[in-house]
Length: 82
Image 1 (cartoon, rainbow, N blue to C red):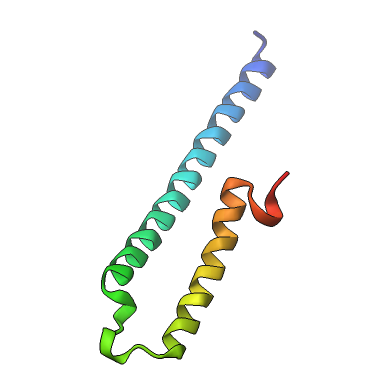
Image 2 (image 1 turned 90 degrees about the vertical axis):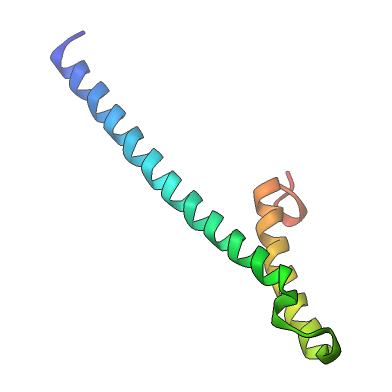
């Protein structure tokens, strides 16, 4: 392998390492958001059952709509289906 090819290979290896680090950072960010959402859900989205009104329903509808867009994108469903 020539020096030029070695330099290209080294650059590609470093680039892949940087990409992997960025990927893992974003994955950790998503994991943190998912954990926070799970805790909020476990706490009934900070709503007491005796105080639930249509505003709470609308808020959950909004959250569900946003999450559906994310899951459709992640799983190639809905508007993201092939």
